[in-house]
Image (tube, rainbow, N blue to C red; front, side):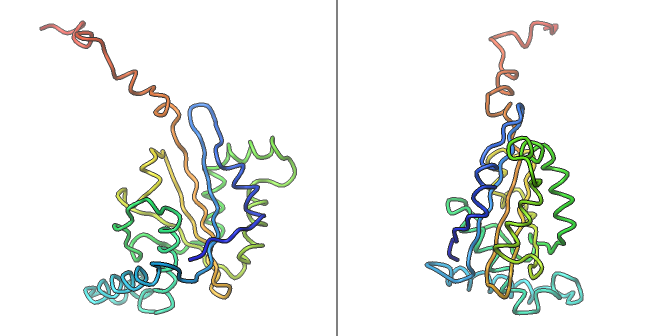
Amino acid sequence: MKFLEYTPLDRINDFLREINLGERTIEGSLEAYSCKHTGTDKRLSLSLENEILDYLGKSSDTDSSPVEFLLSRSSRKTLIYLVLTLYHMYPDYDLSAVKAHQFFTEESWDTFKQIFETYMLEASKEWIETYGGSSLLETLYKALDEVVNLSECEIYSYNPDSDADPLLEKGAIWSFSFFFYNRKLKRVVSFSFCCLSNLVGDGFLADNLCYEDGEIFDNMDM
């Protein structure tokens, strides 16, 4: 997977780097990759392929949606590209717990739009105040369309367990990761966004849980 530089994504990334909303901060990142194996990608790709095949071999329900989807080699290849993208996004994070067939779900643009408009409402207001003109979602749509041609894209969400979520390690209150994959272009854009508590970062919670010696027992009968 090779990281690709695209100017349309830069402006949005600059804005989403850190949006301070007082008690919480919104962060987001867009990254584009070409689906060409580099470095250790081939070895990791083979390992992931074997992992999925092993899962299929142990599954008795071949009519279930996940299993039926993974019977297709092209579908397995797609999921492997998505996992490889995660590895490049978080090179210092241990993603050994990632199970491609468990954590990725195919989505529609409408589903993504609903989640974005709900959770990024305040960020969108900040965008309008800063730039005016087109909304954050409209700007995002145009940028994605320019890079991966959304009409030809498959959209996936990444919904991991806690031990396979790099964003939870940062103390995220909520987090989302989406992947926009164009099979023809062999290109994928990842979009992750999350909300972090500034109270935790400022030591607010710790301060409120600390007492001087004996203070916690002042109002207790001993």
